[in-house]
Length: 608
Image 1 (tube, rainbow, N blue to C red):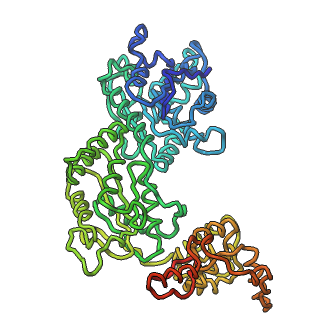
Image 2 (image 1 turned 60 degrees about the vertical axis):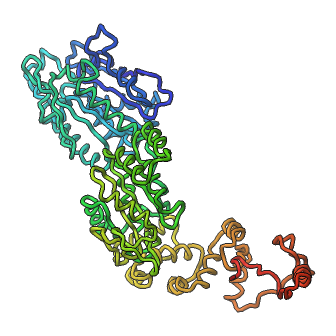
Image 3 (image 1 turned 30 degrees about the vertical axis):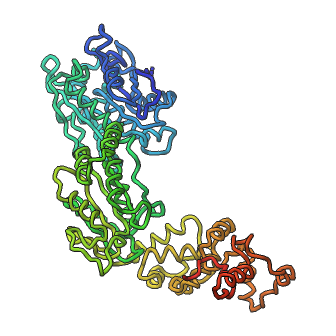
């Protein structure tokens, strides 16, 4: 039988922490140093010491011998546990598993089953943020292998047979789990026993290590049973688990990357080499510049890097063309918002309001709280920060118009002991001290260009692939991504041949007309009210009828008498201005020459 027991009230929690015991374990006793002392139940300590967590323990039958009770095979038990977790609505918010011994193998089985995404349990793989392994036999236990010599006396259960040393299923489970973790970015904490039970190590240190890149197995002065029963809150296992769970809570409550562009496609085609170069540059440099002509794919690369960074660090996106822009204030606010702890963010905000703090003092206060965090600050459209030729300044970071901003960036670059990095995305080289500078010069090559076209047409065939990809690529600026997207956008609402669309893309007036012809009625209404186009955007149906008449060589029908014979009306009600006659009379009385003509009623304002 599988049971899920709550440890504390789940109201206000942002993450569920689930404890799973191992062989011959119990949902409460496994986690108690003294079963006669309820205060030694350390899942309760975690619920008291870490805010915003809901703690649960799982109890299930996992007996080593049939004389003691029953057991299930690992795969079957995983499904049983997932079903009960789902019945308690676990998996609807982020999860952390803390597992002892065979419970760790059960966690791996749960995550591998749910990661396949073909069942109702797929949410567990998506929501799990961290796993703690306590003496888990990832490659099996020699003790279980020894029990094979006494099968009749012990009457092993399926649970013991799953724990045999170098069991093929465990090897495959370990390989699959390592591959999945490399893609998912799941965080881990691993502990191994160093003392034997009556002189025998139940789980060897080599088996307790899951072989995950960058995750050490931490040895503990305890035997297999005591490793999951800390004596007090100062014991290394409990302190380490508490800090680990606190980091997951901070990650879950962390503000999302600021204003990342939403128009960037997934995946990015043909930019793998550039992405690798920028990743390598960021691994060794504080200030990196990504430059290239407009629409070549720089923002897509930067956004992909921000998405990757967001799994392990903070990614902050600022655009020099957006609001609030890139200023001293916006940079400091973005860095302050990257502090992990909500409590620390509040304390920092109060301190930054002190009137006696200058910019550098505020910067030091922020960086002091970011020492344990990595922050990638992306500055897009950075060419807009360049000073005009008449006001060039010899700044250490480039010819920036805002000298205070340049001084702030220089101070961040020179400050030691922090992990704040800048990625400047610019249409032209800007920074003097950026190292290295990664240019993006070429359009997409033929193969990724064909994949890009395929992604654009995934939602509906619009005829972009009616000619060979190589010929299409040459027409579209040598595989220029922005030109391709623009032509696709027009083509999706128009029957205009692709060759004609290429010339349209270089003609503002023709582009204006083509874009209007591709819009739906709701878009036209919105753009008409905003006066985006240089002429009124008529309803689609009327525009389509006129376009068909022009293609057929038929003249446009005359306006109805209602419009052609309509008398002139004062303009006050339409645009809030006096009629021309009134303005002329006012001008004469003021001794000024009378104005000629009426107001310009077009979508764009008249030149001054």
